[in-house]
View 1 (cartoon, helix red, strand yellow):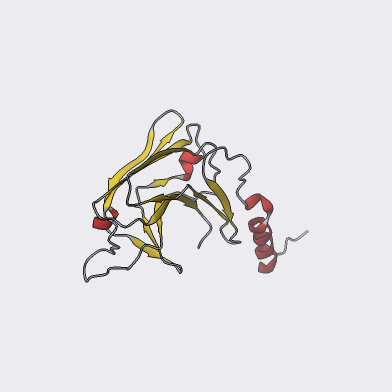
View 2: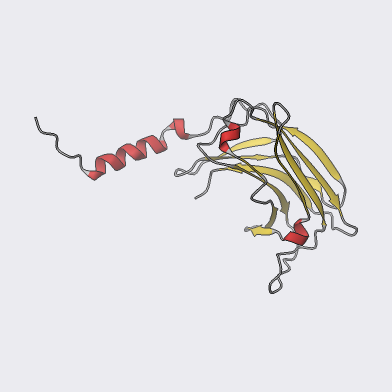
Length: 187
């Protein structure tokens, strides 16, 4: 009995079936935390977005949100960002970070069930620079360190809460912002 190699199409078909099966989509039904959790249906990399209630950047804001039973999304990292809707005029100068005139200090901390910090970062997005995305234009503040690794989500000491603190500088416009966690859903 001789084994003949399978045509490449069979392997590709099998990979597509595995990739597109319902088992690949994150299970959101077990999430018990705060915020609005939604699936990001992208066939190559389905993901999850979790967004909390908006607040006004012209006023101090501090909240702690439960993220109990945060679903694992393959081996994807949850990126944690402050999202500013309709941030205003983009200010770009040569050799300077992107600015919107939204000065203040942002602190974000994620902690596990046992109380260990996954990360804790404090910075001024206006000084270090915002990211911009759109349309419609949104400003994003986050760093490579404001992320929750998949290994922590899947661990025996998973993330339990996330805390945000915003302290505005004088004269900041009353723009709406919200804390967002996102894993997968894009290429």
